[in-house]
Image (cartoon, one colour):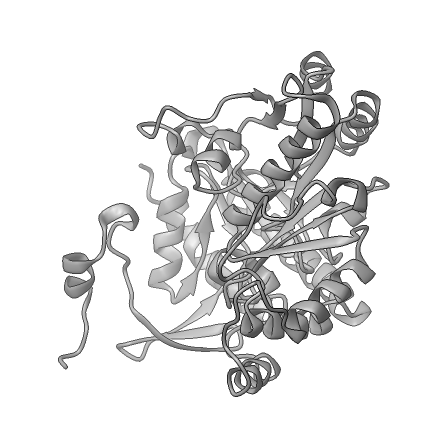
Length: 404
């Protein structure tokens, strides 16, 4: 077989991703190497997925060991890794029950269906409205793009599921006007990832919890991007003095192996009665084995404090560079999920920064056209941060001198 190229990619893949700029052959730790032998510092983490870096030896060992036992069983049978992982997740969170899926969208789909079913069973069909937030992102299924607050992801796919109310993020008054006895759930991110790396206002989150209790609605927290240590706590909601009814997790849950989970309290979970929902691959033994090891590695005080410490060092360094170059309104986020918000005169140019970083052998992300997003592996060292900041110094200097 001839060496595969980007021309091959363009010829056989659907065009929804465009044509990537590189073909990556392997990764180790916080670096990846392309087919030409060039090595890149990974400050993107596969979009907040590769929490323990690439090919972490303990995760590889867990995968190989399970691969030599059993790969797949239908959900008419149980498997040990799924039971062990569900038990471990309930021990370290609010949750009593776990449903496994394969992606964040599927976990969020399950959460939305569960909230609707619970409200239907308890109050009837009138209690079906779901409050969501502008600029939120919850996945690409029809149900989750309907929940998401970014119209560009919904355009051309209608008719869409109804019953969603979208309100401004981090504004209490619109929320208080929107919630009612018809509300069955409020779905929110503790840090909007795709929506610009915007942390939630603690006051709003407290008001959501109180209002949900008042009207008998479920609080769903989407932790697909913020979960598994990303913010310096195992889950982002744990920074706040509230308890959700449902939490979704994916991305870093399997550190790159496709697995997702929906966590729920007993009163909510009981509404997923026999046959009401399912997933062929949900609870896959290999995914669960990897996630169980990932949970063990991430949920350590040393690891979580490392995330906070290294994240603070990265944020401080970016702020120092911003003092020097003045490109950003602010650098925001939590732990190792950070967003650099471009000033109005640079709006629309975040993608240029990502391209410039790639030219200097560093992988970065955007969160919309105006925000440079960083979501590197949690194992990033202070030396790695200093390396990244040195490269950003060069990138920002060139960007400043090259007006659009």
